[in-house]
Length: 291
Length: 155
View (tube, each protein chain N blue to C red):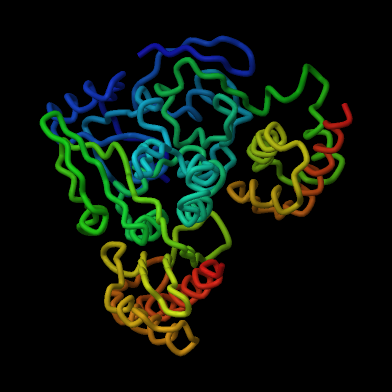
């Protein structure tokens, strides 16, 4: 079993400017944050990198949760543990804390970061569905520019993001909902814990009286990227939430999925489980949306 | 590159390659073999050490990134011949069979009790979910951690 790492040059910038300069100058350097995906890929999946740029020196700069001018801003180096316990997140985006608390294990949550979870871009990334239903955006910086990428455009394929080689994800931001709403995350793994999702999903429901005024559904681990199930969402618009409607929405989400068969599950099982995951997330979101 | 850190209260300095893992440096260069490395890919938790107070997987930590850090391994739990209450509880409650997962279990439990001296059973189980045991000692591990927590509070 390969448990040693291949050789590489390690760069440990002390400032963001230094880090961006390095990314610009080096050819396809990999960024090292918590290492819980990157180092495993290098040990197990033959991933090679000549250069690693470590974010450890920027931990203080890139590890934060702030509410600024109506925007919830989360530093990319914020760990899963921090996300799951942060009072601002628990108050204004608890579904994100819920998902973060289900990533891996205690140790992985101490080390792993939201930036890493998103940039590793596994379709199974657990922070993706909640961030998608919260309509989050990614702030990417390079030496020459800064841009905001809506999360719906961030994932391009399995393991691939919209970031350029010299761009660094520095922050994830979202507008904390001002309406009354309920949101929930559902993760199906082979075990209760320490597992990569077989299927995961998040649902966001806002009600106007009895009718749905806003519905957002995001599904992961069942397509090349985590995705918003827009057609499924449309079924809920303006409707009252009933078991029949939820079943129809779940079915539509299942139809939108393009799952694969891999070591964790078959495509057929995943497609069925997308329906279950969406149904459960919707039911819980609906419960939480009650005044 | 030269790195310096504290291991179980002792300052240490060592030259490491960028790709050397903390687990390997501790075990092979510093003879701190209480750190175990069964899987090497972060799945089993036996390599768990405390790094600046947090339980981390030393098999997925670069030694070069541990410069200036405070590291505690299972060797740092006991004071000379005197076992830590956690270690005593593990022995007395039959929480050790082959012993391979034990250092990792102890370090995860230690980190938990530092932060939450009175965990519920559910909290203990959740916290230790990243520590796997092929012998199946889980029931007794949970019992031992709960008991050690109570004892440590009384001390």
